[in-house]
Image 1: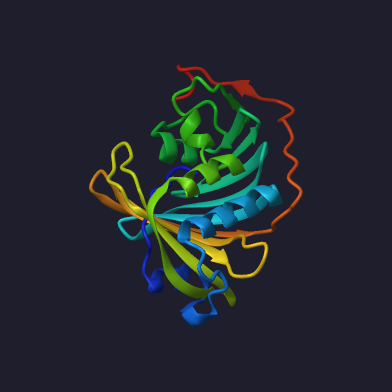
Image 2 (image 1 turned 45 degrees about the horizontal axis):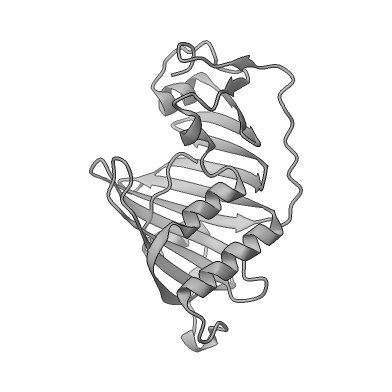
Amino acid sequence: MRLRLSFFTSAAVLVIVFGSVVSANAASNPFGAKTPAQILALATSAMKSAGSFHYVSTDAYAGVVQITLSTDSSLTEGVQTQKLGGGTETSRLLGKTLYIFGDKTSYAQDFGVKNTKLANEWVLVPSTNKNYANIAIGILLPSLLQQIKGVSALKDAGVFKINGQEAVAIRGTLASSSGGSGGSQTLYVSTTAPYRPVALTDSGVVSGQKVSSNVLFSKWDEKVTIAKPAKFVTATSVTFP
């Protein structure tokens, strides 16, 4: 997951990404007097209890979708496939051990390196490498939880239906990040037990460009077993950008 800012995107954008998003009757909100913070806590607790899930996401820059991600995530291991500018890159994270497999296009698009010798083979990326954190973010469940919790000024934005599933929208403000201004984030929490997230939207501004992300969750409690590549090379500051 290369970028996670935040902001509630428009209903038109949500329909494109999520298929069907409509406002529901606010009176149907089953959370009653619970505060937005309490509803958010229910959702994050449900995520931890499930222990694993799948999500797909799109990241848009200046209104144009540029990155798509497909991720199977658990507490301790996960796998993520990224498509960017015609290139494909797969990352496997086992605990803190990170491996990536990318083609030449993905290296050029993601890291600005042309004709890399690391293309089309598994590469071990040490945690000391400057790219490690940016590649690993959002692959494991704790990383995504950290983002979801990293909001302030929470408020209940109402009840919606996303692809036919009713969810309460909890909106919050994100702190400013390196190279960007603060944005806002909306988590859609299922109105039926165990109150897991249905979707997540966010947006903000980075280097003067408006960015946004949309995430859909599914396959809760799925079995996530990630294998260490049988053959790999270790990246260095010279061989890996």
